[in-house]
Amino acid sequence: LDDRRRLPVIWLSFQECTGCSESLTRAEAPTLERLLFVFISLEYHHLLQAAAGTRAEAARDEAREREKGGYLLVVEGSIPTALGGACATTAGKSHLDQLREFAADAAAVIAVGGCATDGGLPAAAPNPTGAMGVGALMEAGLVATRPLVNLPGCPPLPVVLSGTLAHYLAFGRFPDSDEAGRPRAFYGGTVHERCSRYHFYQQGLFARRFDDEGARQGWCLYELGCRGPVTRNACASHKWNGGVSFPIQAGHPCIGCSESGFWDRDGFYRPL
Ligand code: SF4
Ligand code: SF4
Ligand code: F3S
Image (cartoon, rainbow, N blue to C red; front, side):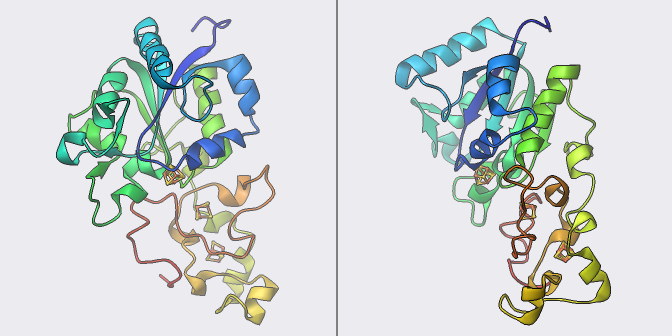
């Protein structure tokens, strides 16, 4: 990369709720403003672009041609595969076809959030749209294989998004990742390992109802179905809202939102 040139980024939104984009807007290191005005050239993004309609689609397609082989593709949302991909379209083109086209010409792909990494909420049983994540489509040979990093979470932490982008900008590659394609820096440990209630877990002090004395004392939420022990994420150390808090600190068990298939797994609020 020419170090005076901003990295072109095309952000495609498929079956999603925009929560992942919302998370990016809370990024602090670097901030969204610095990313947009100093480091990246955001060529297309449903939530953040000023353009709309055919002009926006034309700008996206023009960027793809101009930056062929050099842009970073970010995917937010799952990709429906049932009925030939007809369940979700943008500007008359199925999301499956869009991903095929834009992945083929990308330097690398970031799958943002559980929807893009493994289908997420849209893939919850009975998965009527045949929703799939980017990696599974690449493995199935339905989408060109490109360097891929997976950032699970519903949504991922802001610093996971901005930090991964910053690493790619600095080194021209994704951070060291595990077998599931998740950066070890953020997903290398469980929520449980760094949890502020961990000492209560060790002492066997558990809240058993949301309104009992244990809950008021801030005891461990394991008996209320906390998935922290089996959830790999950095919430307990990096936290949300500028490092202010995270679900467990606010009194709610972790529901394992960065683990594959968490919508269908076990059910929330039941001990493991
Ligand atoms: Fe929304 Fe969660 Fe999907 Fe992100 S992963 S688009 S927050 S449902
Ligand atoms: Fe572990 Fe959850 Fe208890 Fe925290 S609240 S110590 S993550 S079981
Ligand atoms: Fe998700 Fe659990 Fe963190 S629910 S936000 S992984 S604490």
